[in-house]
Length: 432
Image (cartoon, rainbow, N blue to C red; front, side, top):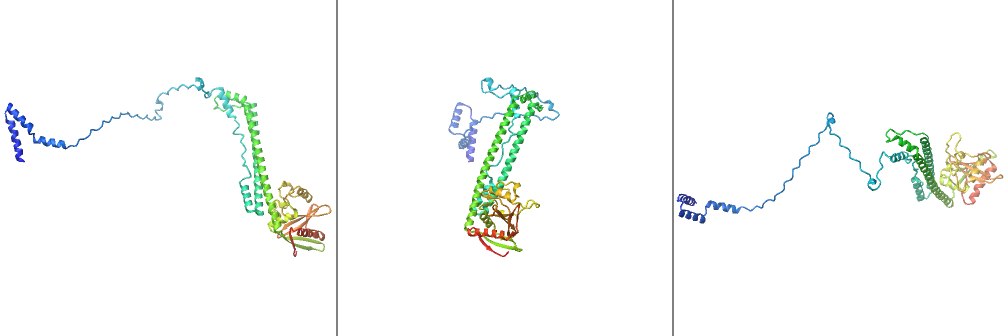
């Protein structure tokens, strides 16, 4: 290796030291062309070993966008240095001006002022439609469904009581709605008359006060009055229609419950007649007091039906001795079946007249009623609740008495025996 380097240096030196003649130049050129330099050969080999790299595509440079400077915040001391306001743009022409559909009315035109006056006097927010629940109500419907599923006398009367309470609430609601409509109608009529008689100054914010008052005093008032009356009549008619429909629904539901209660009482009377135990009590030589052992609730209703061929209006009627006034004592009738509150304490004569007008249901309260034949017509016997017993009270003039004569006691006992023979009850005698 060293010898080669020396030979290469020697050759080079010889070539440098040779004269620059033709022969020398020619021999030297031939030597360079046939035997290349070793260093150049090494470089050629190194270059040949390098991989060929593909040229990168030329990417266009992104344009430089200048950033906008934020507007400076104005302090309270520099607010007066703002730029002058830009002139307003000219108003666009309405489509009607260019041959299209009619555009909005300008706010300062007389037509807009008249429309504003009518809008201000519109009666829609004052006359509200009636808001009353339709049908018989959810509570009454649920009670009726329960009565149909249980099929007992008590469930039928419980549904009847719930229906009666719902009916009273609904009537009160219709009365309130009717009163509200009347008050609103009077208010509207009075207000319109005030506007028609004297011009009311408009609020300061109105665009053109004179035109607004003129529009309200003119055709707008007449239009408002006619529209208010129409809405008022429509609301009253709607309320009356809803009330009629509600009354029909309640009447139908009550008729169904009344028929169900009567059918169940009649069925119990056929299958299990009530058993009564008569307890006569002797008072002196000529007077008697008659007692009956207090029956159960269902047997009491069956006995009510056996005495009168009617049904009571309430389940607890035979034993209800509650008094709303301590001084007057308990009432003898419920305010049911058309009986007013003033007629709940009638005399015996008035009681005959009231009950004769009721063919199916008798609203008796606190006693059972039995009718006896008499010379001057039938006489009533009341079996009044006295703790564990029922005590007989016979009609006498303007009242009832419990102290009976021997003949009267025999007449009442004979009526009970006649019912036993008819199969309506079973009578037993006990110690008084």
